[in-house]
Structure formats: C-alpha cells, structure tokens
Image 1 (tube, rainbow, N blue to C red):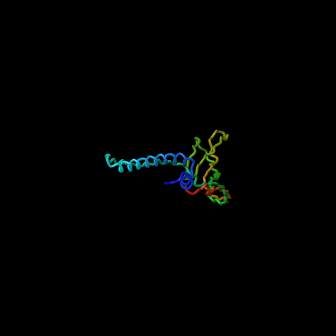
Image 2 (image 1 turned 45 degrees about the horizontal axis):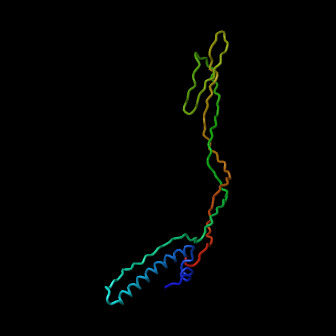
Image 3 (image 1 turned 135 degrees about the horizontal axis):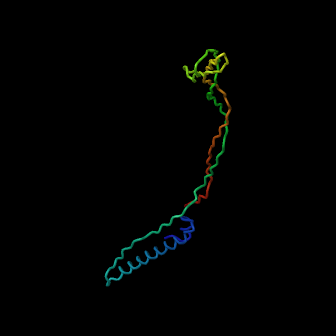
Length: 172
C-alpha cells in the first residue's frame, strides 16, 4: 500500500511518525494475514469454508503545532486638555452698626434672614453702672463663583498587536 518513508515524509512530518507507522504496519500485517487465510480456505474444496470477519482500527495521535506568534506592545500617549470647572468659596462681609443704647442684660447672637447678628457690649462707668449696647456686627455670607482654567496633561495607553510569522510546514 504505502512505503514507510513516503507516508511519513509526505503526510505527517512529526516525531510521532515512527510510532504511528509501526502501529499502521501491524494493522496492515493483520489485514494481509486474514486475506491470505481467506484465500487458502476458499481454495481447498474438501474443507469447510471459513470466512473471517475483519475490522480495521485506527490510532489517532494529536500534537500541538505552532501556527504563529503574536507580539503585544503598548505605549502611553499624552495630550493636553483645558479644564474649566467652577470653584466656590465664601466671603464674609462685616458691617458695623452703631447702637449706643443702655440695656439691662447682654443680648444673644441671632439670625436675621441670611445675616448673623453678633451684639457687642461694654461696661461704662457712670455715676451708676449700666450695660450699653455699643454696636452690632451684621455678618453676611456670600457664595462667590470663580473660574480658574488650568492646563492638565492626561495619559492614555494604546495597545498594538502584531502577528509574527511562525513555523508553518505543509501537512501540519
């Protein structure tokens, strides 16, 4: 059927070729012996006819073949981008309001709308001692929005994939 060298060289080209070929030859020899026995049994006219039933078997071996390689590389690119986000801060304005009124007890701190009123008192010496409301501090909070554009460097990774040609022999 096949010669040993032609089958190995043309079809398989692998380190398992020799063991595969030996198994193939053993199966082929068994097949040929069974055919010879069949032919000799049919030729003898006095003996009972025996027809052997033959079945071929195959042994399959798998192996890994390198079909190619992949090279993955990445690089970082930079670009500048202007970011303009609003920034908030609070500023306090203090207004002094003169009162100069005599009072019996020190008033507490109070809120009038969005204004915090802090009374300022002092003791003055008269013929009699009296508590005089000298002034009040009216404190207001204001929310101020400012923009401070800044240049910021952003980085981005980019991946490049290149196929590298591998060992691709025929028959694999």
